[in-house]
Length: 441
Ligand SMILES: [Mn+2]
Image (cartoon, rainbow, N blue to C red):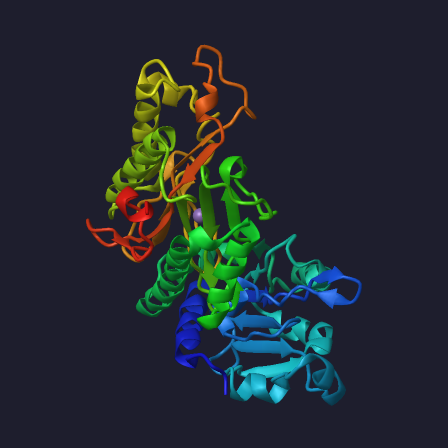
């Protein structure tokens, strides 16, 4: 038996097929990726493929044939059963399992893709396939498509264009169903508990790597698949490297520790949380000043994450507080409007304030299209993660104050996962404490 509720995937397929309106979609799963020699990275299914099938094996392809009658619309190509292979690499569902357990209307061996694909897509209005993302089968798809184009010029029937599946799937995945919200809460909650564990154990840890071990061990203990992305465990000045992942410096009591980590569940729902805590239990005067600015910016930004608002409004809400706070302590000068307009803060805050979160950590869905801002709607999940990073890596913009040594090496980010819910954004990561009084000991 598969571990996941088939009804969830059936419902999604139904909606997707309805949206396709006569088109045929080819959605490939992920392949194994080589780590070194004959060793591979842990398997990670493609999120779109997972979303529609719940099938967790490499080298599979799903077809969605909205031009065919009911009962002939969902086709799976999978690795066939093979005892020797399974002894070496593990269980496979095979063709029969794909039909019985995963409810494919028909399943085939992946080795037969070239034979069956032309017949399946014949008669569709358009082909739906992501060009440039699936090099192993793109040639096959393009070859079949161009053969049908030739036929079309004689018969007048057949697909004459290839569209991206993102048009249909991003829209679906951006709004989380009740079931998905439940799974996201689980992922975020385990992630938040891991941050609490770090806070409570920090005084006995000597190296960033031990913290990473603690967090990722906790994820596994809780039954998660593992970290959703490379955990960032950055003490002192390392925190000013946004995607720091070497995680191997010793911890100094005078420094802060920035941890950006979240787990991925077995069904791929992800948490993404950042906390910054004083390693020795006390913030210095300068650290506290910066922390207060970032926390204030983050809380204000979360409040603005309401239905009908948009991600730029949330970003700007944070930005205004950050800039005004930095002006107050002499790290920026001039009018707030001008500083924001000319991006004179970018040596201290160089990223956006949040992103969608779901099956992908930077989940699918547009934030804006040209000048049009995508409005926040109930069921969207947005991270809110302002920060300030003070180092001399990026030159101070002309006219802005030089940075006094006492500020350098402070890097702070606070990130929560927020469910959009009318005018009351729900902070899913609330279990990870962030008030100064909670972090000091
Ligand atoms: Mn994030």
